[in-house]
Image (cartoon, rainbow, N blue to C red; front, side, top):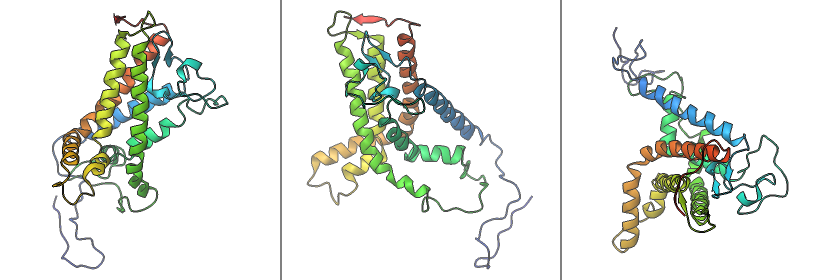
Length: 273
């Protein structure tokens, strides 16, 4: 099996090697894309099922609210769970209770630079792996509709920051609802706090966040504080892929734990009241 390369400048060619095989690679190049596709699919299936279940999302005793329902906006929400108030009508089954936050969070992750690479390779196969041909005749990148919308990622970042603040409030206010009506810590509190800390790590490690602090600066010489902040964000940025995957797991774990406690399947172990 051989590959031939047309002469440079030959009309009607793109000067690429003509290879009859999809790839000459002998390693398990397909394993990474397969695992990525399975991981993303598992999260989408779980999150979709939970968002539209519209039940077991709130633990009144300890003020636990799953992030999949925050902020709870439907008039059908348990009143105490809607800390920011609700809209004046109940949502039909096909609308999530967190109608405003979830679309922005979805778009923030969907347009994320890491997730683009993940689903471009594993699902869209553009390309599946290095030195593996892709099943597409043309390549237009992100220069045409609808993919040009990926450039809106920088704006979804600001929405994600606001939603992270809401999640932080949810985790913080739950500390003031111990068994005696005062400060208390249970396993659920720790799970909510760890989840929100990791969500901040993912959000602040975003490439758009790094650009906010240093993208337009011609020099950091007269901006020591800004340079320090840009440096810290840059350090987080090197682990953006790690946080992207970890937060998918912690979001499901947090929601699953709240669901079990809210449904009475388990009780929340108290550490301090």
